[in-house]
Image: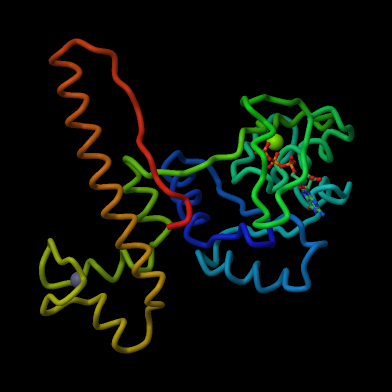
Length: 233
Ligand SMILES: Nc1nc2c(ncn2[C@@H]2O[C@H](COP(=O)(O)OP(=O)(O)OP(=O)(O)O)[C@@H](O)[C@H]2O)c(=O)[nH]1
Ligand SMILES: [Mg+2]
Ligand SMILES: [Zn+2]
């Protein structure tokens, strides 16, 4: 949403997850009616990648049907993911042309939602498109998304192929192509830092889960999934 809940770092996580899953990511920026800076929010979202589709809308408006038509054809399935209160259920209602799903105001202090939707639900639209409305995520932790990260940060991934060392950490190593690009002003440094953080997080979680699977298998216990992450970071 175009308010205090907007986070570029969080959007990158969702996009990486979608790429990894082989799903086409589309960024929907809701609540454009509540801001005069919708184009700034859109420019930030578009900075993730020029190829990414970014759609700005008022989720309560019937115009949403027109704006999302390319992805909402008969036989297609879309899933709305995002923090609580961004308007996933509101948008589903607008697409369905009714008010069947409950929605609830966000907190005025920080624009956070109240976790109104509590289970995933598939809705079939009049157009024949299936929409999955989901509960707002409190956190999104990355595991096993190395391919998703490569696609999301394709420019940095391409640069890193030219580093002198295979295991370059892109910090102080000699012959680091990424740092050379930073020096020449080609690379956005905050974006580079977010990439390094996500790559490290993914590696750590993937290793942690692999070890746990081994341990669980040894003990013959069923396998559990994923861990915790604070969405503010
Ligand atoms: N002004 C405005 N309000 C919106 C928009 N989208 C959603 N809202 C309002 O934001 C509040 C939260 O919307 P919901 O649809 O319940 O949000 P949600 O993403 O489904 O939230 P959870 O179910 O908690 O994950 C409601 O009061 C909506 O009316 C929008 O584009 N503009
Ligand atoms: Mg909801
Ligand atoms: Zn390097």
